[in-house]
Length: 333
Image (cartoon, rainbow, N blue to C red; front, top):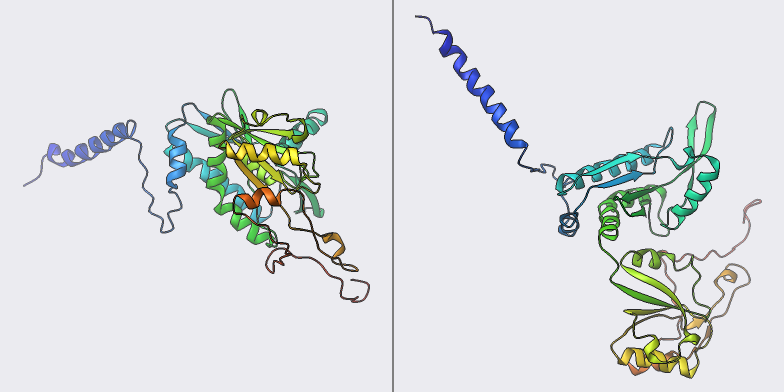
């Protein structure tokens, strides 16, 4: 007894109908299942919360491009694209990306564009690459630019701690990609809510020395460099959410200390990065140097609030390396 043609075709019709129904349903449902053991394609709740606040499409320009990139840089480049695709899967709005090499710009535009990247902390890195003619040097820009229709921000994605090897820096950079990208998106979509004063005029840190902190705060707050000697009354400082004092080297007057004290007493937030001793680190590797205690007028202010700065010099055995010349090996020190 033979089966009819209709009986034979019926299972295939049901299978085809199921596939079509699933395809139609997928147009309306957006879901993602991460089956990797290390949860490579899952996001931290903080990142997911940032993505939930996206209300318009975003575009990411990957600046890490170039011919014959070493394996580590190619791995970082691939990880950036994977992270963006993961963000797009969780975002209510589309997040696209493209590759852009700043060195392809005309020379007059190139210099201006590279200087603008420096405002985001994205500085070029001189990298050795292999070409047909042998090993040559090439500039790369290990950063990203995130933009919407109105604004743009950027982030450096090649970051490591002092003393790390290049491989360790690359691995840490890949691990931190989710944070760097989500942080850049947060700065883009969240308006600055309050202002921070950075006190100037007492030999504080230069822009390069304090750039890491400035970069971390930029986008969340408006930053102002404030010469404290120009403040006349405590009300002149009352509008700042926080006041930063970074590594001063010159003494504060009694009037300036009074203004800072009144600012704190009225509910202000004061952050002081203060050295208890003065030491010329650049001389430590030669004839040696001596650390001398310093009093800049802030010790008494801090002591009123239960803080004492010890006159000690601490040696960091892990990261704070200070080279000391111990002799010569051939023609090398």
